[in-house]
Image (cartoon, rainbow, N blue to C red):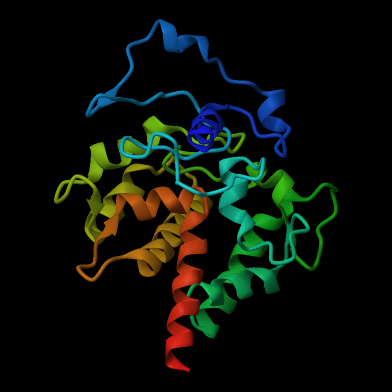
Length: 249
């Protein structure tokens, strides 16, 4: 009982201790008392940005058993790839993480190069570029690009309503799954004018997620997408991959 209460309380906070920007730029929570809230199956879902959890209508407290470790949801999304837990993700760590979740060597090497080159500089705590292209998780909110779903805010919090809107707007075949065509329509619908980098980054990210987490019918489930946002999907895929490798021995 105590664990459930603690999990619920942590899912409601709007700040993450290891992401000071979430405290420097607080969000209002008093709107909860004056604006009507969306409900689903008698479950109350807040539209306030969440600092450390990624809830949806069916998981109001976020991912069961997933530990936020005082990181923002965006930081949690990246933390799996921090192989030595030093708060910095180098290209070889990105490569190792991609291999752990099931991508082959060529795809992992390509994505590691593209991701670290594209995201490194905005997160650096200094002005000069680093030729090793590290991504600093502490500043990863600065690498948020445009033409996305808006599920992360500019401080790396998670916005439940923007996540739910993905399916409200684009899930036409199944209410809790996206086809490849619907996924493409979503990335097209989220385009900002003249935001070429954002367009390309969004296409790549969702394409990679589709390859990683689509089911046998070629559908990307709502649960897989939600767990991608808090990084627990990567932990699950790595666990499944280890299990498959052990069976082959």
